[in-house]
Amino acid sequence: MLFIHVDECPANWEYVLEGIRKMSHSIDTSGDREDDDIHPPKERRFVVLASTILSSQTKEDITRGATRRLRQNGLLTADALNNADEETIRKLIYPVGFYIRKASNLKKMAHICLTKYGGDIPNTIEELLSLPGVGPKIAHLVMIIGWNNVQGICVDTHVHRICNRLGWVSRSGTTQRTSIPEETRKALQQWLPREEWVAINPLLVGFGRTICTALRPRCGECGVSKFCPSAFKETSSSSYFRSNKS
Image (cartoon, rainbow, N blue to C red):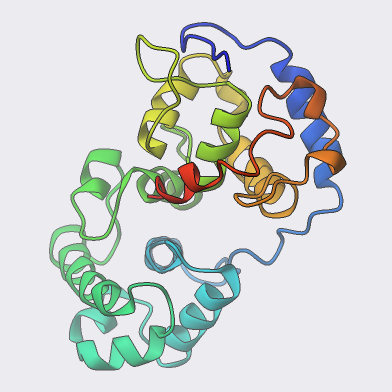
């Protein structure tokens, strides 16, 4: 299988994106995030950070439920989480993935936000990455949603998987697939126009959940399979992507 060098623009990428957009009309992602516009800006940003931490390796409905329970118990501010008992946080966010670790991270994160940022959240990628439980994907997503500041592409396992299948990215100086989402982000940003940086994540996430799935991708139903070098070839090799989740 051939892959492009990351400093080149892949052939037909615009046709592929447009084709995925057409397919995405039937994909509903409107419920992926709680509507937090009712909060003052500082509190809304904190909710964005907390709920994004909860969402890692967790289904959307589970994340929404955990966020809702925290809200109902008045624990969606830095001050409240900082003062809350960790066991209480665990019970409220269960069954999100790694809920014990996340309860600890939420409490530590709340303390930092309260003491260092006055209850707000950091406004730079570097500072966000210094918070417990925050990696590159979360940091970039929070910057986009919380601060309306696009510093990079939010790359999760769906974006990572699909970009590799399409041959859009490769490891620096090689033709090999990127092994982690952060490598994919850096490679993708070298050629994808900046105006697509925000849209690419929800577009490929919806596509990855319904058609270009990790296991048994539905290539026969994909409208852009003719542009995909991996079409009809991934059924037996999907374990690659399972072993490289981040």
